[in-house]
Structures are given as C-alpha cells and as structure tokens.
Image (cartoon, rainbow, N blue to C red; front, side, top):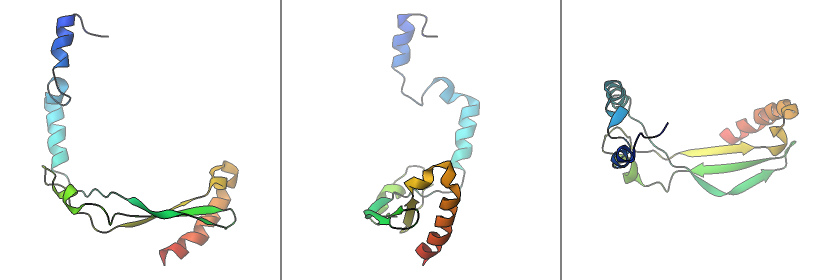
Length: 122
C-alpha cells in the first residue's frame, strides 16, 4: 500500500474528497445520477421532549417522547438538489426495558410491548 514517492503523495493530498479518481468513474457518475432521480425525501430531526418516564410495569420500562417541532423549516428546503420535502410535525415514542435486554426475557418483552403499545397509540 502507500504512495510510490513523496511527489505523488503531495499531489494526491491537494485533492478534495469527492473529486478525481474513482469519484469521476462512469459507473460512479451513473450511480449518482440514479440517486438524484429517486423519490424526494424528508429529513426529520427529532429532539427529546422532557425527561424519560419510568413506568412501574412488570418488568420495568421507560418511555421517552420525541418531537421535531423545533426543527427549522428552512434547513431541509435549502438543499441544492431540490429533492427534499419540508418536514411535517412529527411525534415519536421510544420504549426501553433494560431487564428485557437479555435473551431469557424475550417473551417478557413481547408481552410488555403487547400491553403497552396499544395504550400509547391513544
């Protein structure tokens, strides 16, 4: 591996990532063109809303709520490619249970989700 001489190393260090070399290979350029023709996407930045709430279920678990209401509406639409959609208000819930992280508690985790998730959908 490595460069053959210091002149080649100095010449290669001037190039920016994404320019020259394989970045300009026809296959890479076709792949980038296909990616840009794809469906528009929306980038959502979720921030934690409040503190984690411990639920005294069996086994115990915690619930964390997230929202993107503080996300800047202009940050996603300022993309130069124009393929980004403006984010809609989004709300998410995370459920975690450290005791259920073990394989032997797999069925307890399934039961906990089955009883808790319908309540959170309300």
